[in-house]
Length: 163
Image (cartoon, rainbow, N blue to C red; front, side):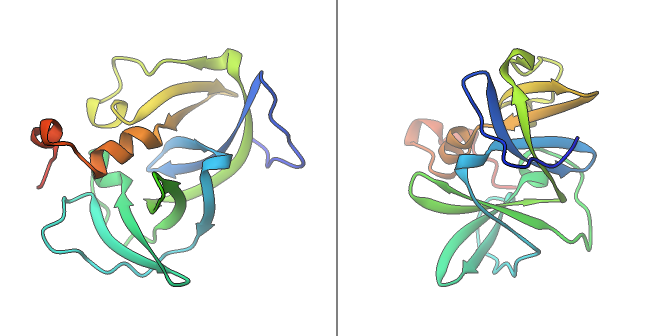
């Protein structure tokens, strides 16, 4: 995979900001990413679900920090330096804490598929689809589904994992 240089997506392609959780590669549409930062200082929020690691201050704006490793059910890593992919979701800033940042890539829509049933449910429920590229699989995160997890309706409260 090579870094994108002056790449403009058309109807046949999609630009993705990629990142890693463990050895797994994920992506988010470039236009939904506000910025990528180094390891942020996270202030814990009492009684929040385990995947809400806290709040971060981005130049005077608060962002909710989500640990994607915890949300997707990956094993926790102690003393791991996290990177932050900051997105605006339903008007709110959300910092997705990831293990490492990848490249911005151009993905061909003809290599796009639905997430397979064999993908663990904890991850699959937040993935829109998968791109198969150069021997890599890139799982595309669905920010709208993340938003619903952060702002559950009364009917959806039984799905929240507070542990």
